[in-house]
Image 1 (cartoon, rainbow, N blue to C red):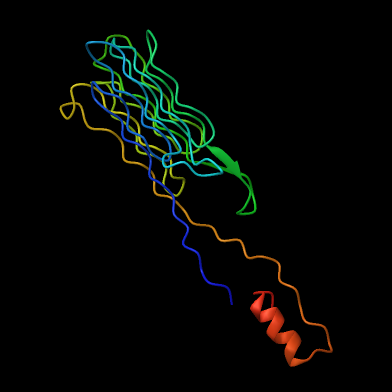
Image 2 (image 1 turned 45 degrees about the vertical axis):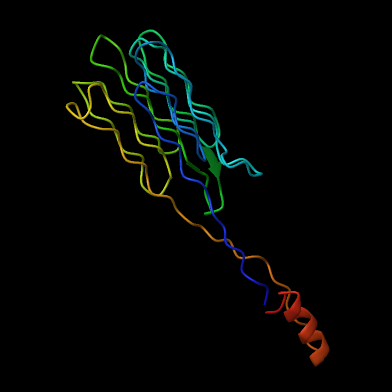
Length: 197
């Protein structure tokens, strides 16, 4: 049999208060605040192919945060009136039907100055808080979706949402079957090639 190869993936980057978002499999959104705008965290860190995720959104310096990056799209930056939505995840049919996973969390809003919180990205991303009216929403379980960003000031109005748990799906390869006539040398070759059933 072949030697097992470990498969690992990077966690998502953190959101931040008054600072740039953290880098990770998908980047965290930037938290808004003085003295100006901040940048979203880089995605696909460390770099691998295919890419694990995308960059988080920037803040606008006026109370609107950026959304977290998703597996399929970057997080959107905060703009006047709304924090940025999370980036969309990626659809896969490995489980037998199409399911979208790994959406980014939406950005939270600094107080309730008529602003809207960022919505979570398709694929399990949680909505951001609109303090003090609503709390951040956690990412959906078994999707790896990012949690929504906290409102300000946290923890008075609640913290950020937790990230959704991931899921491991294993698809077995199609093996060749032995013919009705074979010898021990054939068996040995197919076992060596990890191709015997």
